[in-house]
Image (cartoon, rainbow, N blue to C red):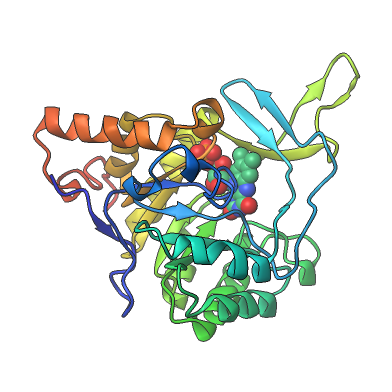
Length: 309
Ligand SMILES: Cc1cc2nc3c(=O)[nH]c(=O)nc-3n(C[C@H](O)[C@H](O)[C@H](O)COP(=O)(O)O)c2cc1C
């Protein structure tokens, strides 16, 4: 059975995963702690915590709350910064077989370029995931990923500053994800990650206040799976670059469904908060499903459920 996938088929540098099960940014730290307990090299890919030019402390607590079939977080990009990632984390990754991908986030377009340039050629870094689901400080809060022109600018800037293959992580906070997906593919993104968390609110009736210190946060987990499924279906029907699903996968069967909607790989995020072994379990379940169904390559099922093409 060949579960392998190349997430950058259009690029001179490949991003080859031995299977389609990846970790989702911010739910796996940078992998160093979990690697003491499980074999990370069995996974298809590891994605880092969102990394910025300078270290960040993130938002005040409380910044996570459980909700029906999901959770809301407002971590606010707490991270060690790109310099510490390069000196302390990448050397460990360089010893691993699994491709490690750095999720990057800038406040401005030039910051994305600087991050891409810093990470280019660093041993242990196999690729980037460019998070455009965050506010464009220059235009007062609208997310880069909500505006095809801003999305294009970020993607071109990253492409100019690195030879690494890169995924672009879209926001679900748009009425139609297709124009953004097309803009990103045209500007040179090698793959899409669809998508990030969905803005949400939870109230604590005891305190008569919002649960989170920042009031709002991002919803993830099984609650968002049908929304992600639709966005994967739509995005993959308009671009010819790989689409990685991120949002609500809890099992190997969820992975199968995302692939049938058009995904090439699937990230496991919130599931790891319930079961730290979730990415490995999903992979085992995916293999068992393929075996039971006589599927020997994911090409046989990718996009089979789509009717729009
Ligand atoms: C606690 C937490 C932190 C996250 N941090 C980031 C981040 O730093 N960068 C990013 O692009 N996405 C971040 N995400 C979004 C996840 O990577 C993922 O796209 C989202 O949670 C949907 O997938 P899931 O339902 O499998 O969790 C975070 C999610 C959670 C729950």
